[in-house]
Image (tube, rainbow, N blue to C red; front, side):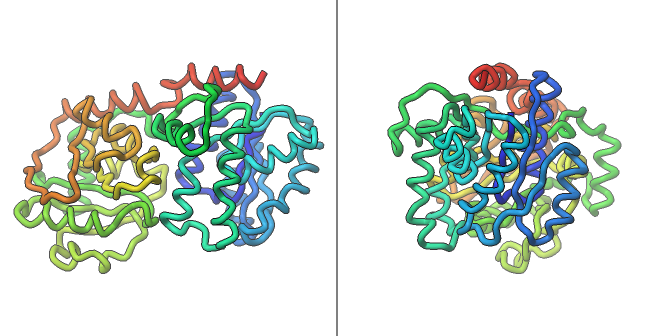
Length: 380
């Protein structure tokens, strides 16, 4: 099987949701997978080096400049597939899927699986992910084609499958739901109290400080204005509450930082090192506005926060995860329109171990082995 990506630069998400999936299919299921990634010419050599360092057999190729020219990658892909002699493709996203479906129409491949990471039409329009108006007008056609004409589908949430049924008339059951699972290096034991306190001390935190952590990007769907309001209300009456951003953001854009500059800081660590940094914190932040994009989402950070022993601060209707946090009592539901008045308390080792166990049971690739097996069997 080929796993095809188009335009996905190397990142922690690609490492856990693409490369780690390929490794899992090979190691746990004895199913050969060849990763074929088309990436931007900008920084191509450095990017290719990162892909190859983690997955040496990956074929990393330059894509046509500018995403609007995505269909032109068809010709090189056709040549590559001829050389590989493989007629089954799993594709990350709707553009890669449409390239594969075109190859299937031409009789070059036999089977196409859509690995859907979200609601693309909604995301492109709600958050201006793509600035080309022609592409924004056609994205619904591409998404509908990918959903309905693929032979099999992988969705990251039940809410996403419901979205397909309601918006594209999807009627098949040829799909599995596998959330954004954690990378293998998150599958480890919790930090001991001694190690945890040592790391906290290196950041300047006192023993009784409560550390809220935000890890992720500054993309529009992260809803920073809503997050800003929450932080202000959470910190005003609780002087022991601190916030750590593991993100490349400008803190001066936050009103909370203007009010509490000595209690909000940022850092940046590699995705291989992030476990220890998360594990010295107490609560993981997943606060997002109620948009279609977020209603069907499966944030990778949910499982990562849990695996590091954190409790989750999450808004309602965030994919399948708000209900999960409530069902398993592993976090607090944050109502964005209401002032936050709960008091933070130290997260005990018992609570931390509970969070970690939930991650192992629900957000590892091994936990979804039956679904991966169904995916493989569907391709045979």
